Amino acid sequence: MQIRVLGCSGSIAAGSRTTAFLLDGSVLIDAGTGVGDLTLDEMVAIDHIVVTHSHLDHVLAIGLLADSVTRRRRAAGRPAIGVHALPETIAALRAHVFNGVIWPDFSRLPDAANPVLRFYTLAVGDELRLGRHRLEVLPARHTVPAVGYAVHGAEGAWVFTGDTGPNPALWQRLASLRVAQLVIETAFRDDERELAGVSQHLCPTLLAQELRQLAHPTEVCITHIKPGEVEAVMAAIAAQGSPHRVRALATGDVLTLADATV
Image (cartoon, rainbow, N blue to C red; front, side, top):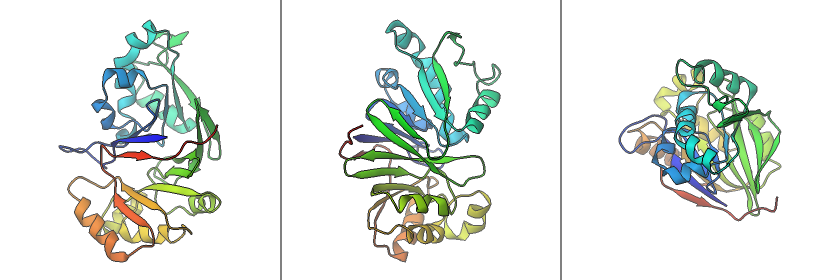
């Protein structure tokens, strides 16, 4: 399987895109500003969007993508794009985005029987079968209801924590998984630890505490760093030392793992 990093920044600036990962061209994991770098053909090929939580940097491209692909998908007889998220996340999207004021409701357009988007609820612990992919819904701890995801492959799981503060339940689950690659956020510097705590994000010191709970050395990719802060955050992480192979994720990276048999 191939996971293309469309965006991994905590905010926007030139060259920075907010969170979005594209799994084998058909499954979008979060829908931040990086989705806008896809071609129209690439957007049309997306059949599923799995969402970690309702914050704008993770969902703002859902409505714009729907508007862009409506005609092409309808002409090709393609089904509705499945949007998979917690019930609270779907409720927030309906109330605050697809409400006819901020954006049209593409779960009822072009018509209610044949919409561009169709919402599906999920819960922590669920297993999603999306085409040939098997995704597991993982717990996250954030200021709004949130989840992470594991994509199961032959070499182990690609794990994305989503936005999360310290999260014991995540490590309890990962202890029984073979983690091939971990994508984990570190949104703030250590001198902003209080802000990290209030906003339920990580800083380098909190990240180190979390990674100590990961038993086996693995590749760890840091995401959600604010623009202009990558060098400072990564220097602080490097200074702590780690048995893991830790690097900053960058927009445009392509992560490759062996496929699992679904």
